Image (cartoon, rainbow, N blue to C red):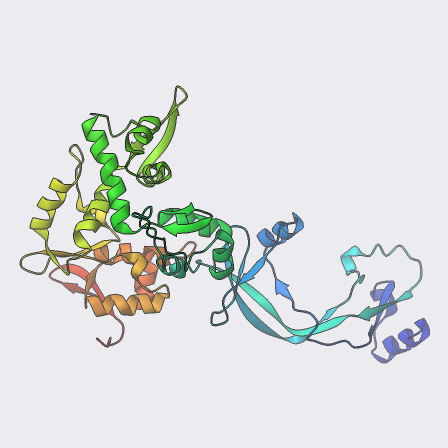
Length: 390
């Protein structure tokens, strides 16, 4: 344990003036069994610091074959080890210069023990949640409706919300938002997605009821819908369908739904396209309009990010291409898109890269980085920066 006199002698050798330094002198020593493996340091931004100070928790998620991510309640962060040339010491009770009052008249020594040290720390970078795996897990056992004729339902590969939180690399809020996007719901305590044909069957029941009762699509009564369709399908499924394809509101203490024209039309289009490699565009548009409920209008804008048009072929064609089926990694996404089509217009490719944009990032910036532009017949097109294997 160094004395004040020893410290002053060291300062003299170092040619430092005692009056230029703090009155409080910290003398550091290593505790017993100190190891760099005892602690890990993590650099937090102001948002995460406030999150911790408010008593909230941070969770590290990822299976053994995945790169770990850190999640708060509503955001996901990439974890990256950053090395530092300066040794980082853990000093409980040690005060920084701005915490010292310097009220002491003379210098004094405070002995502080080092609890641990590190030569690296975890650096956090906000990133998009990794949600592709969610749909893959839920599609292992989609819900096809109530079992008929005494047939037992498949109870394998079902996941609770907690199961998904443990396996999906996303915050709870991001996970819940995506479950809503893919039309998942809770059935018998498990999160399930509906078999697409069954979902369309439910939607058909709802739209046929609206037509038979001559209701407005903007005012579909929940209570009457459940009473009329309850004998055909579970009431919970009818209400779930209305939640997926409509907006819920209350008027005079009665619950109504306003059906979303774009969602209903898109659902019908997906049903028509799911078994066709390519569809003659003009014929598709005719069949599509005939297939949606009377009073609704189909528009190709409704199919952005779920179907791809080919205006260069003769006749023009349309095929199913859903953004949710594409790779999550940005480079892999671009490589895959350029195997499907050598040259893309900005209008065609934008719906398939929009979700890759980070904060304050534009699709234009992504195209500049991952694609090469050129002019073709007076139109700007984008192709791969390198040869793509097909």
